[in-house]
Image 1 (cartoon, rainbow, N blue to C red):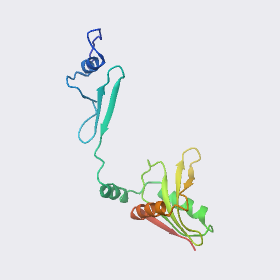
Image 2: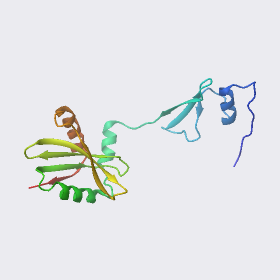
Image 3: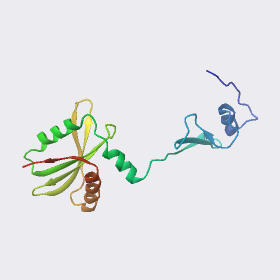
Length: 164
């Protein structure tokens, strides 16, 4: 491992000191892990530390949806069982579960109810309870938001549970 030792003195401002320690001479400082399509850079601000920015290539909406369509996390069957037990007899015709990543903070679900119409609601996995937890519901009056979320959920559909 190599260490750089230097001193800041009255002859160097913040910007020069940062460039000295990072061994860079240009005005933008790239972090050691900045490479390829992901970069993290910092520009020293006089007397205000470093202003950090990042650039990432996330892919198009179609590419992101395509990646999600191939994901089926380990806990998927547990979510399906939990929904069947929780919502049996609650007036649902069906609940659509999208493909999701285990790192997603919440999972948005689309439900088609017999008498109350369509609904989008969220659930999340609670590590302490070791169970799924209801997180919230989209306002049933906000039909536009429900239609937008429904379109995404159906595009990412991994399974649709049917109720009688």
